[in-house]
Image (tube, rainbow, N blue to C red; front, side, top):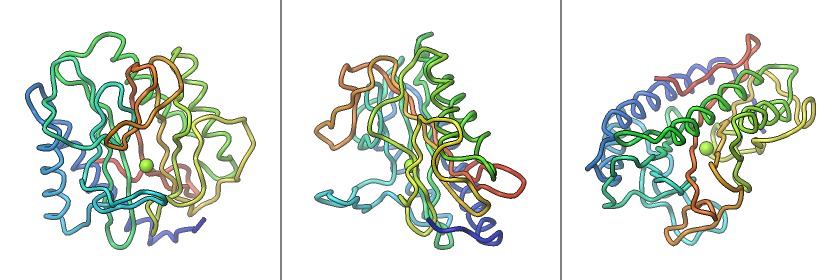
Length: 252
Ligand code: MG
């Protein structure tokens, strides 16, 4: 776990602003008839034109056979995370999670949103709203004196209240000079437990929520989907803990 200085956090905030702007642009491109690979190309072009580096492209997590071949993760419907962009054509009624990272000034930023393609069902709207609300609740706890357990507790509380499920085995993470750093940021927990939060910590908070069960399975493209094929949503922000409280870095 590394702690960032205020000037480093300012650099990360600029990177986050850029990432947020790219994600906003991608959201505006989502509609029936669009392929996920076309969204990947837009993401890559915008990040590179901004002078930054796509964080996921060629990224090779421990144990992976090869580097990730795309800039974007585009996870459709029952796919939770790490969906590979493809010639899949988005259809009316799909939901797609857009997870994107970049490296700016030596620091990584990571963010995700789930977007409806065309008209979403009432249940999908509720799922997306609950996941976004859970992220906001987790962010609220990200302040000095609170703990990682408080963040997880707040996320879990919202998800349960809305009668959805946190998926097993996927978490948020520390982020900075390394994309996936310590600590692990769980989407569940007990109040007042775990690592104490202190100014200078930067973490990616990312509830991943299913409309059905909590089990996930790895799919052929190495993405993770819900085992029962129920739909899933994912919202993520990179957040700095400051003296004044949580600072969301990845806003447009
Ligand atoms: Mg992340």
